[in-house]
Image (cartoon, rainbow, N blue to C red):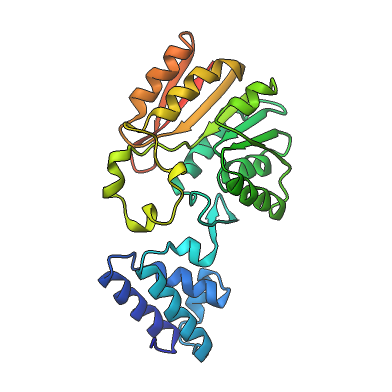
Amino acid sequence: MVANKIYEALHWASSFLIKHDRDANAGEYMMKHILQAERPQLLARLHETLTDEQAAEFDRLVRLHADGVPVQHITGTEEFYGRTFMVNGHVLIPRPETEELVYHSLEKIAHMKSPVIADIGTGSGAIAVTMKNERPDAAVYAVDLSEAALQTARQNAQILNADVHFLYGDLLEPLISRHIKVDLLVSNPPYIPIDERETLSTVVVDHEPHMALFGGEDGLDLYRKMAKQLPFVLQEGGVAGVETGAGQTEAVAALFQKAFPDGKVQIIDDINGKDRMVFLHV
């Protein structure tokens, strides 16, 4: 059983998780969840004593993560762009790289008044809800092929007071069928090649939706389809921004350039210097 002093419990969790090849810092997230405290409050309370119930619950959660359950599924939340989003097994857990996609996308449309924005493959709604909250003047559409994901995204939009229009369907089809043209299209589509499945952590492959992870044999299936559909959706003067796997940007840029021979294609590295984003200006 885990120790009752908070600092001792955290030390135990760190050692236990390292032995199970998990992130040593995950215990801190679960402790914050149990105490309903932010990091500064947690650090100020390190010498306090957990109740027996809190200690038992912490022990249970740490062991769950050691068994492969993502911390975000244990706590039911993940932070994204300064906001807390509900997450579950129906949606991809938002990553920091996608925050960078949002940041650069917002910069691209900073000069536009009342832009129309679409988030393709919205999942938890992290991109769409963030876009609406950062640009209240925008009309924001969010598309997904998973009804369960859309339900989660709708809940996040409601909790975070974001008036987002949710559409069910495959990639850009719901926009095309409704004759909706957009100034900004943003997407973090599935891009992992299917043969890399065995190399992924069990935390990812056993708990996150495969529909949101894998993009065919080379990981580029969704980009190929998207490139063919973009001319029917993107306004003149509009922008499309997508996240890719490292090493895929040149191929994705070529697909977009072929779809828009007169467009300007730009590759942007993430904060770690990996090529992760492609932007198309038309």
